[in-house]
Image (cartoon, rainbow, N blue to C red; front, side, top):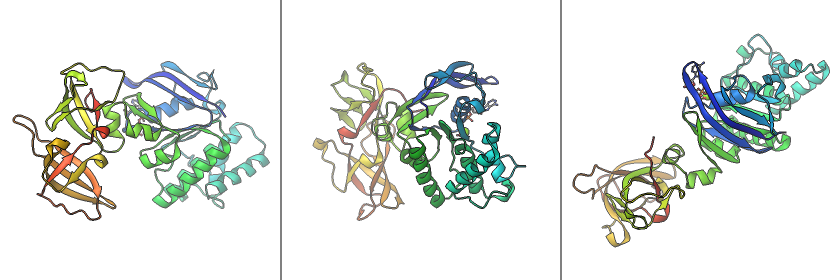
Length: 367
Ligand SMILES: Nc1ncnc2c1ncn2[C@@H]1O[C@H](COP(=O)(O)OP(=O)(O)OP(=O)(O)O)[C@@H](O)[C@H]1O
Ligand SMILES: [Mg+2]
């Protein structure tokens, strides 16, 4: 087992700056999920940790020891590639045993380890098939078996469950979590599935344009994202253009929906100047809506109900705010309301409130 330190990795592929100072630390046995839009550099980061590409600048250390000079097979890293990358001419058993053969383990030991690993991913009996004779999900599980069979210190998973249906995926998540707990493998997992990220990992790192934008526990990142783009990326959010009041935060935030006397700066370290442009942000589940005349003393404003989109237990309701003053652009907010007993309909006028305690203020724009 090992802790992992990724320190200020810079990497250009061709003339393309792909990693622009990636820094990330994983404690021994920790599982960190790496999230970010397509093309932001997630796979490249994993490949650098595994040793398949070399950074132009920066360092990777396991347990504090630099591994930059070591080839992939000497790093005790299990990697599941995004496209599985099974050797097409090798059987399932040969694919899974590959890493052990590279490490010159005895034949008998390899056979035992391979069948154990295949049993773990529920593929016992598939030993002599070729990759072309497997489904996408089965190939993905062979790739996972190939990664864990070497008992790696560090497991790098690039969307390892992407090709699985919901049921298999849930099963594999439980299995991955068990493996990780039993073997205590330090794991960096790339996923597009936010639910998967939250269920598998201790911490979530969000990456934009070759840099880690934020890292924290899933709950903290969701509730108090340090940046507007992180908030927009993790879940859904409403943003309203605002301006810092005449005496900084204390004097409130001016928005076309009224002046808010209290709002939390997302980054307490950055003192805003009066008059600075800002963004007020709130999650749809925190927007309060009732069928009534707005009570402006409670900070309510009036809105017209637009589309309603049913999403199971909740309905997403689009609200077109009424008061935008002369010259302001129209503001549409989205609210998640319990679908059960929802009485309002398209075209109704309702009272909307954005509770102060759920409003965040950002000083930069959403990407
Ligand atoms: N060999 C290469 N030469 C030039 N650019 C490359 C090369 N390989 C990858 N890139 C670019 O590097 C960037 C990061 O690629 P990477 O595969 O790390 O993204 P990713 O975050 O894993 O995306 P995805 O979620 O789509 O898998 C992309 O813009 C990609 O086009
Ligand atoms: Mg990728």
